[in-house]
Length: 86
Image (cartoon, rainbow, N blue to C red; front, side, top):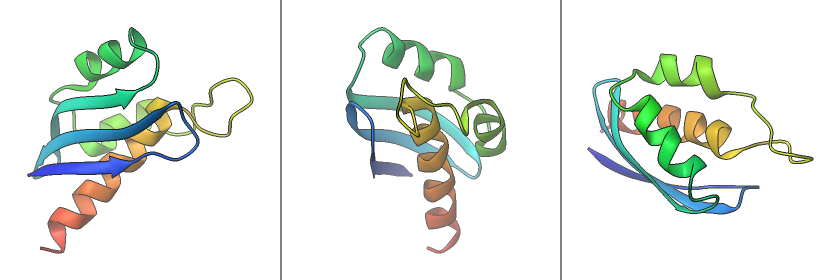
């Protein structure tokens, strides 16, 4: 299932991902730091929602309370919950 998440508090504005059961693939960020937002999808491709959350939840960026990685963890959880409720 393709899922689009509108980010909050980051330079990136949205995250698009595919989720099948609890496996996340094909993560694409819109906006943000080009290099980092190519690296993060490469590192998390094929991981479970729980694995992504354990690696990325709570990471901050500068003075911000969140980061693109933290937002991805939130996006994955939201997509997983949405998938369960369909």
